[in-house]
Image 1 (cartoon, rainbow, N blue to C red):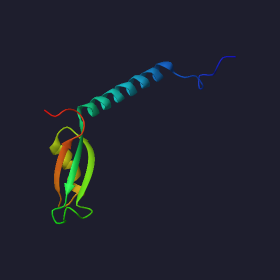
Image 2 (cartoon, rainbow, N blue to C red):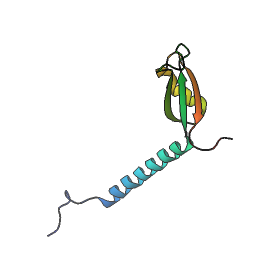
Image 3 (cartoon, rainbow, N blue to C red):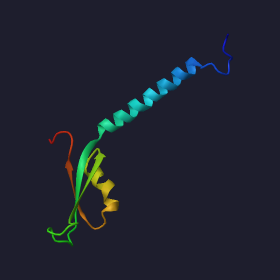
Image 4 (cartoon, rainbow, N blue to C red):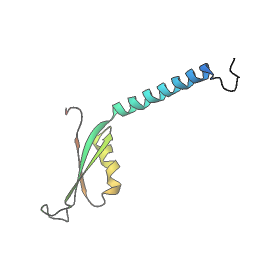
Length: 91
């Protein structure tokens, strides 16, 4: 019994799709590897340091500390931001 063409898998098309997926994953991994993890501390100057809510901590990936703070800034209205490297080495 020979399979009909409708049920056969085109191995060349499948191999092309696999290769494209590998390239996409490699590109995504390379982009991600170029970033580092940062902890961004957001403190509220209007609240006493002893009160709850004075400090919030956010973890993010970015290439620079300024980019990390820029990612967090829209959700931390009126707070002071400070970014610390959480992965990699300090120079």
